[in-house]
Image (cartoon, rainbow, N blue to C red; front, side, top):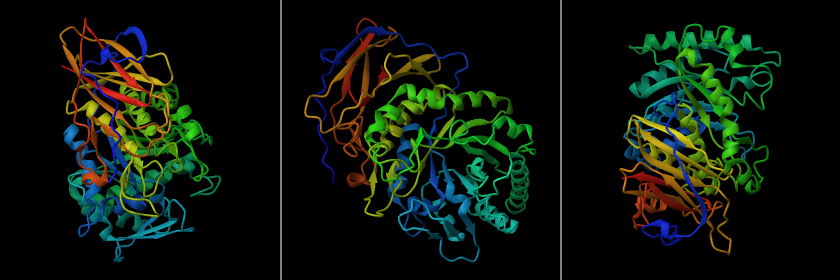
Length: 512
């Protein structure tokens, strides 16, 4: 069992505490006219196809830990997150109706992050019924070209086995990488359009024959790094000009997003943590192309989602994506996206991945554990809560290492989130600095309730809490356990609330 390091003493009225003073009173803006309501399932998941049985288990051995972690979101928001089952491995996954094993993983090298081939059978789909009433987006293999019947069989088994919990299909993953990988080097965007249109129609026909009722539709096109790494001329504008999805089978847009790419899995990313993740300006710059694209595609009328996303591509980097600083990034990134009408964020997971929110089973020396990024997602879920009329507005601050947001329910300011992302290492011998913020709030409020997300340092891999609660596996299999019970209340004085935020921490203020 983990031992939890006590937090600094908390005064009832934090105006009595002393930190670096932002003496200016901060005005919280109202949502801009185009700000839309934020869905309660903003925080959702993507699980690597090859490792879905590890995360979910099966009927005889369900993964109760994963189920508990997903239920925590329902407890906070009233609904479950959506789970996409896909990723790179979906385009290496072949369905065999006669296979007895649920899944066979074939690796080129035992230490590789992902297998090069996945064979799965009907019992694979038991995993879709172990996590409660979660709805799924199921990935289909576009790469396989040997037999169209294999694609049909896979789609039919998915619709019959998953049943009403099937939200959408996905056909192919990150196919803007296809030239020179899945297909020949001269494979063009028009070739892709023709292939996707044909195979998506095949899937629809097969599913409608086997599963009565409306066809679920697709999330698409699931492209990644369009604005940086991939420079082959494949643009979304060209895609739709060439007649992509000519039968209007897409129900939700899906684009993938990462803050950077890790080309060396053995590297340590501590030096990059402050520069890339714990950096508000970096987040704004990273999301700007997605926000612009969502506006450009609004005429098609689909929800705009990040169907696969995380911090650093390449399954993350130790010292950067498996530490508490990543949780702070998660909060800032999520709320900035929500403030700009991105409707859902599917945080990608995989066994032994260095950015995973949790490790579902013991593997390669890695213990079952709840990891720091999970707490960032939980804080965002708590921020949105159960209201269907939440809107998020950015509160401009001065430094790259700080961020704040106002949360409105309808026209009423109800919550404030503030993050101090200045790095503080848990091994630092000196005291932990803090920064004081003063926010102007409507006069009808008398005090605020404070819930903090904090750990011993930005480099911490454990001892994380939100609102004094731990979701650690060793305590109660991921269910919430109160480890710091002291409630924190701050008085509103003269229409202003003052709050001290230690370096490398965040707070959720609920106005009462």
